Amino acid sequence: MEHVKVTDSEIAELIELETARQRDKIRLIPSENYVSSSVLEVSGSVLTNKYSEGYAKKRYYEGQQYIDQIEQLAIQRAKSLFGAEAANVQPYSGSPANLAVYFAFAQPGDPIMGLALDHGGHLTHGWGVSITGAYYTPIRYELNPDTHLIDYDMVRDLAKKHRPKIIMAGATAYPRIIDFNIFAEVAREVDALLCVDMAHIAGLVAGGAHPSPVPLADVVTTTTHKSLRGPRGGMILMKKKHRKAINKAVFPGLQGGPHNHTTAGIAVALKEAATEEFKTYAHNIVANAKHLAEKLNEKGFKLVSGGTDNHLVLIDVSPRNVTGKVYAKALDTAGIVCNYNTVPFDPRPPFDPSGIRIGTPSMTSRGMGKPEMEKLADWMDQVANNVENESELTRIAGEVKELCKNFPAPGIPA
Ligand code: DSN
Image 1 (tube, rainbow, N blue to C red):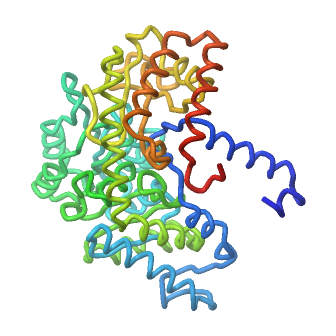
Image 2: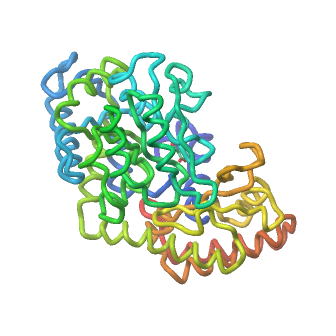
C-alpha cells in the first residue's frame, strides 16, 4: 500500500481495514478463500495495462509476445490439471462463463434446465430474475423433500417432457456429491448438451476430493476463486468439438479483452493446484466440513440432508429459534462470517430465510483442522444462545481473533 497510501489515503485505509477483517475473523462463506501471495502479486501486476482481444496468435492488437504465452500456459495447465480436451480461460467470472454456454448452444426462448435457486442452484441456471431465466425458457428441477438430495427422477421426467437444449448440473448451496453419471445419461437420452457448473467444487475436483465431471460433461464451467484458490475469474473446460463454438461465444460474443492479470493469476493458481500439497488441502477441506457438521449436529443444529460430502454445510437454524439473517449478523459480530441462505422448501423469504450457509475452504487454507472445527462449533452454539447479547458476542470475537493469530492467512501479513 506504500504508493496508494500517499495518493489515496481513503482507499488505502479501507483496504487495510479489510485486510485486518480477513486476518482476524473466521471466514465461512463457502465461495470465498485466501489466495497465495504469488496469486496476489500477479493479480496486481502490469498485465492489467494490456489489451488482448482475440486468442493467442489471432489478436486484434499488437504487442502480445508475452500475453500469448501467459494465456497458453493457463490453458495448458487447466487441461492437464482437469484432464480436459480444451479450455477457455477468458470468462470474467462464473456468470459470463455460463452465459457463454447458453449463447453458444441455445437460441432465445429455447428450454434450458437447471436446479432451482431456492433448492441450491445458481441465478444463472435459469432463475427468473437472471437473463438466463428471462431470455430462455427455464425448466427447474428440485430436491427430494424427504432426503434433500437432487431428485434425479424429476431430472429425467422433466428432461423427457421438455427436451431442453442444455442441462445444467451444479450448485451453490448443495452439500452432497452430485451424480454426474445420471446427468450424462439423461442428457444423452434427450440429446441435450450437458454443462456442469463446478464453481464451488473445482478445488475439490482438482485435488481428487470430489468425482470429476470433466470426462462426462460436454462443457464444464467454473469460477477460479472459490475452492480452487485462484483470482476472481472464470474458465470453461470442454470437449474439443465444442471449442470453436465456446471460444466464439466468449469473444466476440460476450466479452472484449480478457483480463490478462487474472489470466496469469489463474495460471499460477493452477500450478499450485497441481501439487501434492493441494491434494492434501482439498481432502482436508472435506474432512473439516464433515467434522464441523458432526459437531454442529451434536449441538442440535438441523443440517440440510443431515451432513455433507463436500466443503459446504447448509443449516436450518429455525430449531434454535432464530432466523438465518439474525443468526448470521450475530455470528459476524462474534467474528464468524457466513451468509444467510434459504433452505429447501423454506417457508421464509430469501432476504430473511431460515438458514445459513457455511464452508471450510478459507479455514483450511489457514491450516485449521479438527480441534478448530470443534472450537468453532462451540462458538456457533454459544452465539445461537446469545444473538442479542452484545457483550457475549464481543467476548467470542476476541477469542476468535486470538485463535486466528495462530493460523496466519495466506497472502496476509500476520
Ligand atoms: N456468489 C457465489 C456463491 O456465493 O456461491 C456463486 O456465484
